[in-house]
Length: 299
Image (cartoon, rainbow, N blue to C red; front, side, top):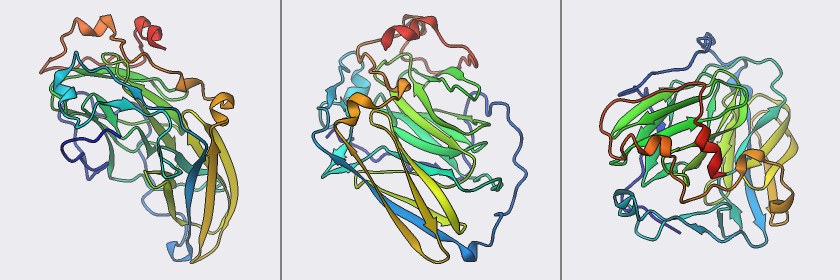
């Protein structure tokens, strides 16, 4: 497992403010300020995501052309398509798919951070509520590019120079949205957008937590970029915690239908962006709704 030499910033930023670039994509301003039910009646869903079998071997990433990124890692950098630790599966987006009816929830004030660190997106999988701020940060000493290609929401594609934060929002729920860097073909992240605050991403221990749900019957979905999705039904009662376990296995690698999860050529560099200069230090070009034609070559 590749480890970084310094601590990664926390995923949640309180009141994040963009230091450069445009702030938000179009979307209706949230108006709900209170929870639509009595939180004293809430219950919880907690669980684990497991993996059975042998996961694919990590893929080495050739960062020889980017020494600034390479030196940030204690070990040779790799890309793990299926990250398993002791039978526990990480990078699984778990959320309430059905059961909340037409409830309207306040949008969290906290921004979710996706950091470009060591020529990787950290975290690999994250979640936000529709209209919640999503902050993209460039912590590397070189040019990056953020290319989000949703199917429902408005896409965006902007270059991001050194030491810059740029905020965006997605107006509609969508699971999932791939985000790539056109400069470094191995860089890929996923963002899940839902219409409520009940979402979680499993970590190295495989755990997830959906807290303070109103009592009721729900469908919980677990999404993985290479293994597809699973659903479970669960009943939440006041003051109780329902336990759920999702189990994926190596056979699902061949059958899962997740079209956005195609392998990416780790050696690809988009020629339309490389000419801008890897070590740009100012300005950002935003091409919302436009993707470079050359980007299709790296799949």
